[in-house]
Every structure is written in C-alpha cells, then in structure tokens.
Length: 418
Length: 114
Ligand SMILES: Cc1cc2nc3c(=O)[nH]c(=O)nc-3n(C[C@H](O)[C@H](O)[C@H](O)COP(=O)(O)OP(=O)(O)OC[C@H]3O[C@@H](n4cnc5c(N)ncnc54)[C@H](O)[C@@H]3O)c2cc1C
Image (cartoon, rainbow over all chains, first blue to last red; front, side, top):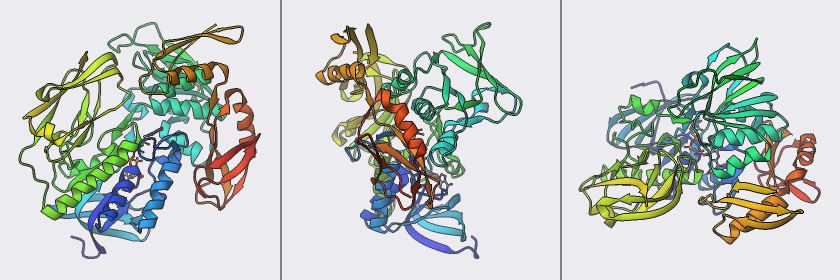
C-alpha cells in the first residue's frame, strides 16, 4: 500500500457523480451507509448539465425536466442529506483485496487519497465513439467533434463549434444536436445514418422536419477534406449488407463534422479488476443486484449498459446500492440458485444476466431490428406480452416477479411475431 | 394537402395522416387514440415547442445558464424568440427555476443555477 497517501474509510465508495452515482449515493445515505461520492468533473451531474433539452424524469419525478434540472434535483437532495462528495476527484484505480476490502485510489486538487470501502458502486458513464472508430479517413483538420464535445462547447461554454454542419448518426444524441445547431442559427446540411431506419425516438426524428434537415438513411460518411479546417465530407450509399455502393459517392460542403455514432460503456477500471464483460452490452455481466463477477463491485447507469432514459439510470443506482447494503450485512450476495437469462430471437442485449428469484426484477433489453405486432415471450415460464412496435432505439423494460423466476432453470427472452 | 408523421404522444408511434382542405382539417387517419388525434391536429394547425438555449452569465461557476420557455411557443415564432435570447445577459446568482426574462408574455426560466 501507499503509507504516505492519506487513508479514508467508508462502507461504500461511488465512482462517478452522474445520475446513476448521485442516486446511488443518496440511497446509500438513506439506508444508513457511510458513503463517499467521487467525480472527476468540477461539477456534479455527469452529462446532464450539458443536456439542456427537455425529456428527462417523466418516470422518476413524474414531470418533464431538462437535464440540468434533473441533475440539480438530485444534487439538492444529496446536499440536504449531507452526503460526502468530492468533485475534481479522479479515480485512478480500484483494488480488490478481499470481499469486504476494496481500495479506491483517487487524485484531487488537495492530493492523492486511498479510500477503503466494503463495496464499490461503479457509475462512470460511457464514452463516445470517435471518427477513427467508424472508419472515417482524410485530412487532419479542425472542426471534427463528437456530439458530446460540441454539446459541452455550446451548452456549457456558450461557444458555437461551426456554421455548416454535417452530423454522423441519427440516434437521439445526433438528432438533439441537430436541433441545437439549427436553433442557434447554424445550417445543418445533413444527418447521415448508416442503417436503413433512423436510430432515435420518433419525437426526436420529428426535429428534422421542424428544421427541414435532410436525412440520408443507408449512407455513410467516409472521408473528410480541408486545409486546416473541414471543408467538405464525402458520403456514400450502402447496400443492405452495409457495403459501400461504388459510384454512389457525393460531397457535402461543410465546416464542421459531428460524430454521434453511439456510446460505449466506460469499463476500463472494471476490466483491470478482472470483471467479466458482456460483448453485447459492452458493460459487465451482472446479477439482479447489479453486482459484477467480482464480489462487492456493483455497477449502474451507462457503465452497465447504454440507457436512453435517465429514469432507468437512477433506478439502477438505487438498486446497486441496495445490493451493496445486503453484501456488507451478509458478507456477500448469496442465492440458492442463479437463473441464467438467455437471448432469444430478435433480442440483441439483455441485463441482468443472472437472477436469484429472491426479488422482483426489471429486465432491460434491446431488440436487434424493428418489428411490428410482436410478442415478447419467455417460454420457460409461459410469459407473453403483446407489443405493437419494437425498435432498437427504444430500450424495453419488463418486470418479472420473484415467484416466476424461481420456477425456472433458465429464462430465454425472445421477441417474435404475435 | 396531406401531412404525414409519426405520432409522439406515446411509444406506439402511430403513422398519422392529416388531410387539409382550405386551411381546415378534413380527416385524420391512422391514430389509435383521441390524444394522438388531438396532437396531430395541433401539429398541423398550430404546432408549438418548448424552446431551450443558453445565456451568458457573469460571475457564475460556469460561463452560461441554460434556460427554457415555461410553456410551448408557436413554432413560427421560434426564430424571433432565439434573437431575443441571444441578446440576454445575466448576472450570478441565478437559481434553478427562476424567471430570468419574459418575452411576449412567455416566461424564460433558468434550468441551471449560477
Ligand atoms: C445528448 C444526450 C441526450 C440525452 N437525452 C436524454 C433524454 O432526453 N431523456 C433521458 O431520460 N435521457 C437522455 N439521455 C441519457 C442520459 O442522460 C444518460 O443515460 C445518463 O446521463 C447516464 O448517466 P450515468 O450516471 O450513467 O453517466 P454520466 O452522466 O455520464 O456520469 C458519469 C460520471 O462519471 C464520472 N467519471 C467517469 N470516470 C471517472 C473517474 N475515473 N473518476 C471520477 N469520475 C469519473 C464522469 O465525470 C461523469 O460525471 C441523453 C444522453 C445524451 C448523451
């Protein structure tokens, strides 16, 4: 260990002060746990303070709020309860000495610290995919930003990133950025989407019509050219196997390219701990208390899986910390048997992976492709739910009763034609 | 004139068609509930949106305060409202939920403190 580094001691340390981490820390305090919340940013809230559009909190607060409003409600509660937190505190490493002995090593403006904890909640959010990852080549120019970078510039610092914009990706983030640019007077020349359907919620796709923004479905941006600054981007059409169609390329003039090509759970520090990762979610494999394969390390929010609703993120934070309390009190999360959850027809990802049958659970899942008039089925327990439409962009959340789970050896979740 | 869009009132996302004649709604097709129909009619006759932006603030922890309109604004008035917002300057302290300005009777509310 590091004898010179001051040592702190807690029941639970929460890594990340976004909605997942804040909800976890609040619940921890309410449950009487000694908790410390750490975030590397100068302010609490994670990505919420930069998401100034409405659309947050309909389930959690039964009210439609903007991102900053949602964050400030949680922050207010946190302060009221006297939760100990530190901002500008970057977690460098998590160590696992034994089930009830973890150490979280972090730096802050006042120096380096090691915080001992019996359990850790990992809520470090996600990272954005960047231009290289999606195979864009060309000149090394300024004017290429991820959506989150552009959003931070505009909505935290009040700086416009450009005037003539091309956006890669029609997920909610890309669409919301299209609206922000258009509202602030920039010309959004195109939203380019690889898939044959838009990636975002219908309410956000409507934005394109509001501002007459062209949407190229089944197209991809492959190249950027310019001297010093982006001048034009090359777009090409793709076939149903997403292969480029020769001769279909065209150029769009623009000074700015925004990459909104999806988020990836941020799990580096979990991987270093040896936590098992699910290749479908990009996040860890968890049980129904959101405990990872390393006992006492829990995960919530976008580090667990990419959520489209902050409400579910906050719910996961609370669940994880309830698990941590059980873990601390009983020296572990035990189950008579773990029921494995399997992906069936048209299920791309599903969380949690193992259910105890001791408690009711929410399953979070995404389909692989859009379908109409379908049924979600779990044949092992005879469960059937009718769904008029399913889309990859909309995460499904279904509740299972402890009694239902206990009956089965495993559960296969499938989405099939009704 | 026929307007086509996806309903956003609930996750069902019905494909709605609104047929207009002489500026009046003639028929609404494709919705499965009255809420959707009401929304679709408003969408063609008088679309409204909640508008958000940021305003520079002096003396705060961050350089801007985010704001929204307290109620939805008619769509065609949005550019005018954005011009009004672009001229606003605020001074800390600003509280979340505080009305920082008013434009044509519509309150502009801070959504982030400073
Ligand atoms: C553009 C955009 C629009 C969205 N729109 C909506 C919407 O309309 N409605 C809705 O409900 N949801 C929306 N969401 C989704 C929602 O905002 C997210 O799901 C949610 O914020 C995720 O919360 P989180 O706590 O998991 O992660 P984050 O908010 O990302 O927080 C993670 C925190 O962890 C900190 N951190 C990471 N690593 C470390 C470390 N090593 N040490 C210390 N701290 C660390 C980060 O600084 C960050 O503050 C949107 C998301 C985006 C990006």
